[in-house]
Image: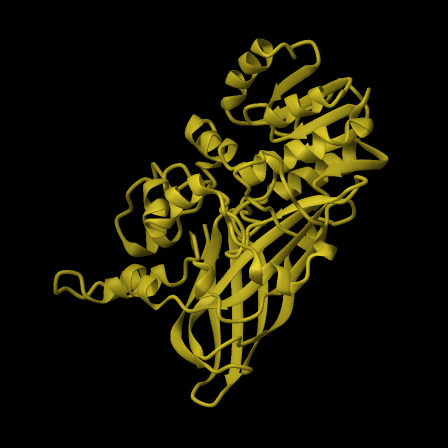
Amino acid sequence: MSYECDEDESSSKTKNIDEVTQNEKQNKRCCNDSEDASIGQNKRAHRAENEEQDSLPAHNVPEKDNLSSCADITSKDYYFDSYSHYGIHEEMLKDRVRTETYQSAILNNSQLFKDKIVLDVGAGTGILSMFACQAGAKHVYGIDMSNIIDQAKIIVEKNGFADRITLIKGKVEEIELPVEKVDIIISEWMGYFLLYESMLDTVIFARDKWLIPNGAIFPDKAQLYLAAMEDGHYKRDRIDFWNNVYGFDYSPIRDIAIREPIVDIVEARSICSDSVPILDIDILTCTKESLSFKSHFCLTALRNDYVHGLVAYFECAFTQIPKPVGFSTSPLACYTHWKQTLFYMEDTLNFMRGEQILGHIACKPNEKNNRDLDITISIKMNGMYSNVNKVYEYNLR
């Protein structure tokens, strides 16, 4: 499943998860000049420039007196506030892969939306709600906890949908709808590493409470993938930097930094193994408990190279429509605001073509804040030059 960028066409060109082979994924490239210009010159700088706008609500974190206190900081107090700022929504709306895929899935299937009651979970600025109205929905109920919904109400009215879109401010788990059931649920619930921020819990709650039997969810499928990467330069810049800061030993911060996955863009050329799925989600049937997952994986080297860490990305698909569509956040696909999630390792591995890294990954919500993730990755390799058997603990927050 992938999204192809084409300067001559504004519509999404996507494929279902089951239709795209590994070879197709390896050969996909983004050819949109405007995206290449903004990303290609300095992809690493892009992350730094937009850090305050990313879904990782890291801005306005209060200072702490010691490193142990810093390690305890979570995103719990900043989640909804972060989505009140227009900057985050600007970044998401300008993400053509994301927005145009939803637009295509909804508008090209007006027969499914005509005269239907639709629920938009996490409505934000109301873009998906308005797409649903354009497709013929009888009425759309949009729910969002952040203050951006106040602006969304004005946007909806200015665009002539005030009589067909009702926006409700509050938590999905705490509000009541004016209707008993809805025919379709639409939601852009995905976070970094697919599950960061745990918004899928809210979609599951809405599904179980309001969706009619055999109702539709957009999107309804998601997969999470893992691959090995060579990224020595960036590891030195972001992790090993702390070993010597103007001649001082800052290694205590390095110990914290290497435990935090980094959300950033990975060059396609940095991927040195095959990509393997570590999680499959059917949003129509999954449970909240199933989102805490464990999975074994085996990565096979595509060439002789070094491995500095692992990279995760996800794919989503809309399969309840006649012609399924979807998108990928792979390093081999077009840029998205989700980028990729990087897990750096202490050891640098010599990875020879055909050798394998055997591993196990376990992911669960943090006990203090279920919007954060605790991730454990164990790897084992017996290669020509590298032998390792280690367990790494990460905290995505």
